[in-house]
Image (cartoon, rainbow, N blue to C red; front, top):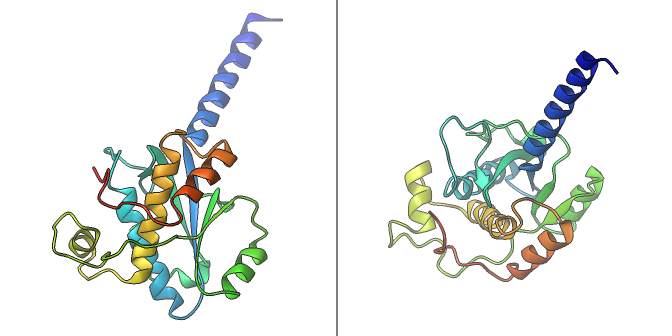
Length: 201
């Protein structure tokens, strides 16, 4: 084979490996909100999620919506027609997310998931810690949320934050979202609660 063809093939392979490595070290998390006051709750949930995604591993010239577990996360608010109030997203999420965070009453929430024909990891936000709305400490979630967004956090914001913190704890030891079984096992371990005061910086 001609040397120039070999060099071209190696260069192409290098680009492919680099691209695959980049994709492997990022993921798209969709936040799906159903129920009443959908637009407001979706925006609040995204705000809470972004607060957690900005707590650790940040760096200049961000091209994602933050980091969870040391991995770039791109946020996709759903449904799209309820995302009019969502702000602060700078990433480029894939239209087929890797993780779907679902918030809303049943059976509406499950029906919404089924309509998406989603085959990835589905995450319910999980139990919130007692006193999550307390602002008596400047490092508390509620105080940091007010500082960042100018208002007290709602339950939707707290659930978005909780989901992101659970993802952070599950992803960090794996350095990614695979293997899937390990990720789902780690997420199940925090379904009953996670300490928000640990590892916020």
